[in-house]
Length: 178
Image (tube, rainbow, N blue to C red; front, side, top):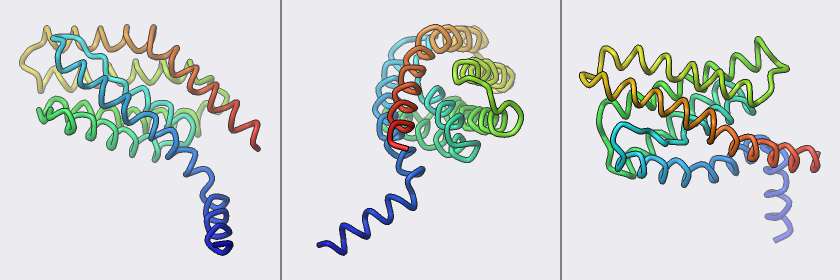
């Protein structure tokens, strides 16, 4: 038993950063699932949170984590809620692209950017790219405009505050233990 405990401690020390990301991902899974479920019942409004989760993971862990988080959370949230429309899966691809964008923006170009600023840039990037993509892919342009508008308003004015709290708690716990 002591050998197993030592092995577990060794693995935790070696992969400490990965475990921190996994803990956050476990928190984000139900948020993504239920926010997509609510969005499926409200026409012309999107309340999903997996894009916000993707931005936070990209901000903390870089572009690869942003890419993988966007793909995993978005795909999981839509599939578990039986939403398999092409437009939903395109939105997942845009969220993953947003994760890569924020990861590079923060880790390469603006290393001192605050999370709140990165979040706003991420949401604007996400919705501009999604709007342009959906102009060509979505025949319902009223839906495209209302989705993008509600997504920006919901995320910048409400979800951002929740994710700032999550980021601050995460930072408080991590920096306290290091």
